[in-house]
Amino acid sequence: MNTSKYQDLITTLHTRFGQHLARHPGVAWDAVLERLQAHPASLAALQEMEHTGGEPDVIAVDGQSGMVTFCDCCAESPAGRRSLCFDEPAFNARKENRPAGSAMAMAAAIGVALLTEEQYRQLQQLGEFDRKTSSWIATPDSIRQLGGALFGDRRYGQVFVYHNGAQSYYAGRGFRGLLRI
Image (cartoon, rainbow, N blue to C red; front, side):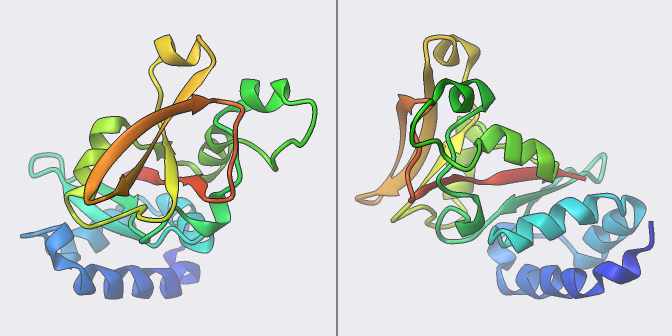
């Protein structure tokens, strides 16, 4: 895949990387760029993360493998990924007032994963996210089998993880994606 069609995206990622060095201390942009060039198919997912308002940025680099982890670092849950129920079974269970889709299906279409609770809490250590919105997070099967799903937000200076019916959706709830390259 030719990376030249993604040059604007690479420029945006480079600029954001430089503006938020605290998210990735000790990481050199050249190492990130090298990884992107070695895995050009990942640029399509990053482009969609950017297009839907996620503002992806590097949040980790594995020192041994060189794997780079990108995450949506927009202040609020990405605007282009809100008003979604949790997954397809929840979407199919809604007969009235159906949302546009589900977070899990959209994440799969983009090529990213929803953050786990641990990853969401780690992200919140890099900044203050979801102070007005909330984000669906990966939900253990034991909770999902009972009809529930988890989401997180930051209120009153604290990070909270809550539950809701998986079929619920709100204008202020979306999801953050995680991409490992």
